[in-house]
Length: 136
Image 1: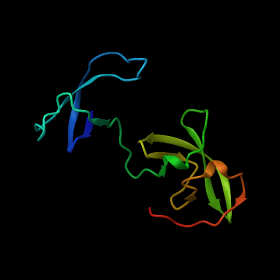
Image 2: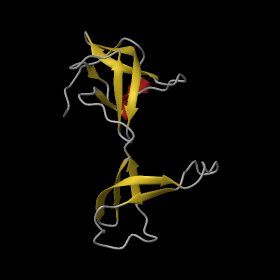
Image 3: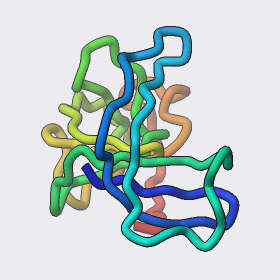
Image 4: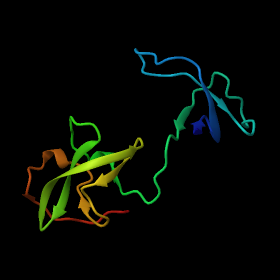
């Protein structure tokens, strides 16, 4: 699996070559061994780094900011507030892949739908709003 490594001025890609142990329950972590195709400019031994392991990619996925999701107890399901007809409409969505900042929406939204990106928790269903388009 590909992995992106960042930290202390280092930005590099590599591949996961081994899982070294079972899940550590207190920290919910699994040690991995990563192979780097090119040695880093700075030594990484004992340096704190952040690794992002890429388990799958969906091309042309519909993404929303993680902050747009309202809490849901069901796995792979969520709720967002959609601006429609001058109101914030509570809309159920089916979720897919996710990153630290974005979540894929597989069902429930269409390209071009305006979602409340932040602060949706404070809005009751059908609350009057004025939609403002932000940066894509």
